Image 1 (tube, rainbow, N blue to C red):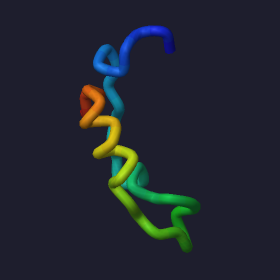
Image 2: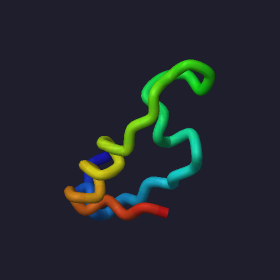
Image 3: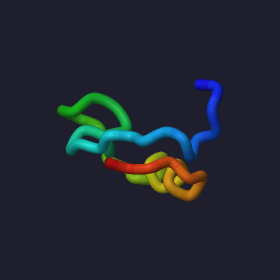
Image 4: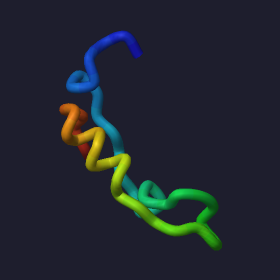
Length: 43
């Protein structure tokens, strides 16, 4: 990844918010929000 973050998009699905495994982990949107603030597009 050599381009600025604003040149990339991330694909969000229901597991994107998990902080660990899908059976026993918490969920968090902090990393997604941080990426959006830095110009990453979200699909």
